[in-house]
Amino acid sequence: MNKKTVTYILNIIFIAFAGIMVYRIFFGSSEIGDIIEDVRKADTFWTVTGLIVLVAFVCCESWIIHYMLRIYKIKISFLRCIRYSFVGFFYSCITPSSSGGQPMQIVYMKRDGIKIGYSTLILWIITIAYKSALVILGTVFLVFKRSFLEAALGEWLWLLILGYCLNVGLLSIMILVLIKPALVQRVGIKLIKVLSALHIIKNVEKYVLKVARISRNYSVGAQYVRTHLRVCVRVMLISLLQRLLLSSITFIVYKAYGLTGDSFLTIVAIQTVIGIMVEMMPLPGAAGISEACFMVLFECVFGALVKPAMLLSRGISFYALLMLGGIITLGSAFFARKHPVEEQDFDVK
Image (cartoon, rainbow, N blue to C red; front, side, top):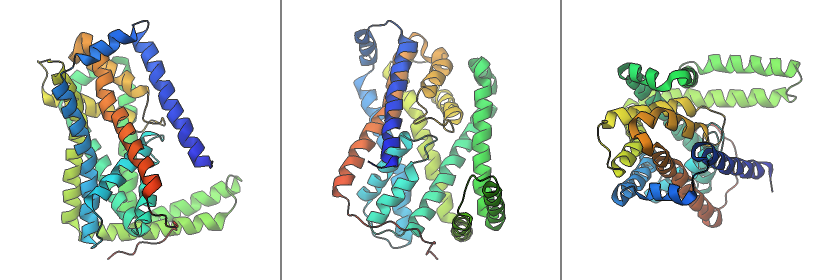
């Protein structure tokens, strides 16, 4: 068993442990039967609708992958693109800050004969668009729902500020790499030399070559964005839709309990803000912190039903995604064609 596999197993154990701790903290001595009964009170039609929306959320990324592969005349079926997406979301769910999803997607795409240059470019554009969508929606909702969010968050406001700064910071770095890849290369090489002087890394030449290769790749990526603006706009619009679909699952849970009084935009705004608060947390699946934020922010929306609503919403948007992704990933491990994975520069025009 290799080191990565052990890490994934430990992350899954952490998620399970965090789930147990959430139950102990928020439900205390409540009987498990009573909790399940509260969850069962949700209307089945809306619960199934939530699962359908979850699949649609995943398929948005699949559509982007399929669309961009077709631009390069790479014939991969849409079903295979759905597999790439589920694999990516599965590994994102079990790795801190969702860092493991895209590397595994590249591996699975390579197994299907897609060059790493193509897959890296596609997934890089998807990452920027997906993160941009969160920042854009979050900024809009923060502007129009500021007083409500400040009142709801109370002492948790610092977490929102931290999460927003981290997301904007990461997006800024991505854009900087897009605009000034040569500058990033120079900074990267200087950083490597500093780390070498501190005896943190040894093989300086290896890392310098790697930074140079990444810089060349992103130079090509920048050229692609400049010459394919229509493609990038479409990807951005789909990413905005994808974000709205994910956040709307909580509204669907709201309808499942027959509640009224709060609008779709209010609930989607709150859920988007939770995404800003937790997505950069170095925890697998943001387990524990996501549930805590839900309880704090949605108590005024769900009232006495906030606990079962949290279980159902998180169950659909995270645990169902984890299970579906796990099943598809496990099946792919048995049936995918094996190809050696090697690093290479972009080969796109």
